[in-house]
Image 1 (tube, rainbow over the protein chains, first blue to last red):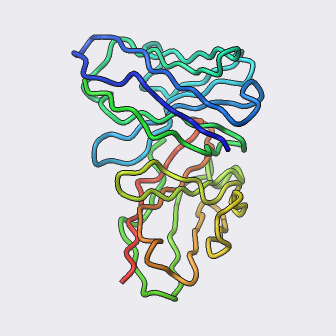
Image 2: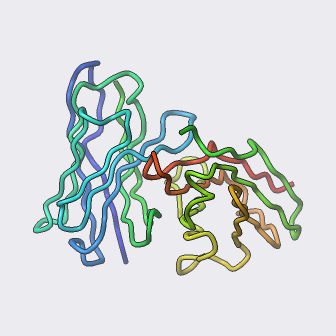
Length: 116
Length: 110
């Protein structure tokens, strides 16, 4: 079955950088969009970024544009989220997810905590 | 473009039906049939239960159903069960934000 696992979350100082990784399996990885979402402690869900199967199209929410970069390595079934100029308000559990349907993510990984 | 509007809480007794609304605008819910619903139990990752307004991923019980009218979408949970107690989030594709979420609704099974 489809599995998604994130890693890389940790405590980082404001202004610092961090790269999150996500590995996925159980499907044709290069065929589907992959998405990063986040959830601040005790808060709701927020969509962050997505990248097309070939990796040629990426989209970001306004609050991270110019600071975060999404990328993927289809040979290794990996998706990355490079986060620069981190702010306190970026503190959240970051989830990686597969987008098998239009604008819907399924399944999600267990998440990785980023604390700024 | 602010978050979609959901009631903070909803409740029902076992066996009953409960509906949760999700109100957006003509730039998101009103413009696209790309409304999704997610279920999140405490300490767990969200799980997709409906996509494209009415479609269920494999394995999701048909007790979960969705609809949309104008700028408002709704999730109905029929035959409430104890395990349905969770947070429910709606989302929609939008003109400004690629995917916009609602603030979440805590469903309590009485």
